[in-house]
Image (cartoon, rainbow, N blue to C red; front, side, top):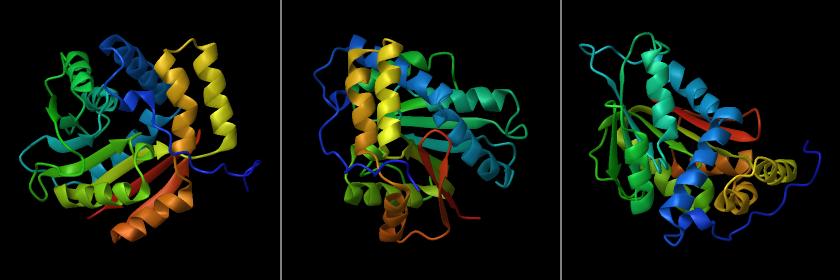
Length: 243
């Protein structure tokens, strides 16, 4: 039972969704998001969900595991996954991550940040009409993007993720909560984060969904064998296993 009533979902746009901020502001804000992912559980949530999926994949002549990351931002999650693979987290399996976004300034940031990571390819792609055939990737990922879209759009993305992934997908996003809103408001100011992050951080939590709402998206998408659960620090994870 939450300590405080769940606030209604906000529909206001985040500044990071606009093309107006400078690339410098975008880069600073995405650096903030990478820190938030690293220290407040986003990266850990993806690794925790992805590791068992990868370990159950069939080995095919040492071919790298093909991962598609949607709405990648600065590609901080793909880089974290590649570093984990290099350390042997996935039982020696190598990864190739295709990191996609449709924002030109964001793509430029992701490409620069991923230099030195030959395992990562950065591409432009519309998440609602992915230019990839069925089962083109082993696993699809989407982190911190669902709260940017309305529920019907999230359902479309779930179906696309299911279509292009041969073995399953992982969604990681925020849980809407009053306490979480207050905490991120305080953190973005105490840590002197970028102006975009200070504006968007609390709003992101208020635009996010509750666990039952994420579960309803899965039902509306008609996708079986999905696990929808909460992980520490106000994160929700959706995991689809196909084998």
